[in-house]
Length: 148
Image (cartoon, rainbow, N blue to C red; front, side, top):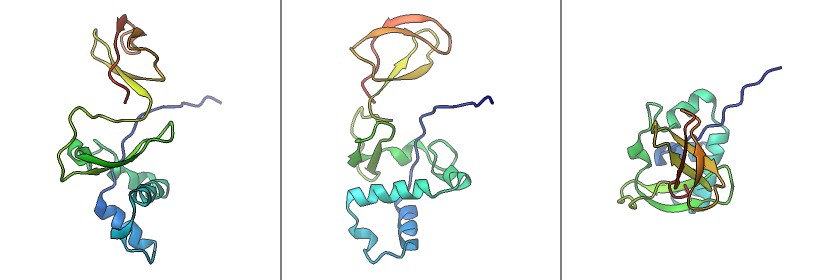
């Protein structure tokens, strides 16, 4: 058997209205407006876990429904306790913090100077390194972007 495994960084955006509707469907006695940031993030993760592939399409950043604007704003809470997932609550009515670009914890973004391809390396140690671009196969020495 030959399996294909694709590792990809995907950003899902759950709007307040979508989460409110999902919460109301849970028939909880706690009002939605009284959720703590932790409960709010857990609700979004539960919604992610219980959504079908077709339902998830409306939450994927860049998938036609959600744009970069939906992810910009002031980060008011975040959970970076796990290696493979990073969760944030973003207030899109507040100004975004300058130069804050979080994709996933402990991953460095590296841009190839030869072909401008961007790739990600987990647990890159040091401020610079010797890299080989997975797109054009050229080697280079350089500093990665800050940890994402």
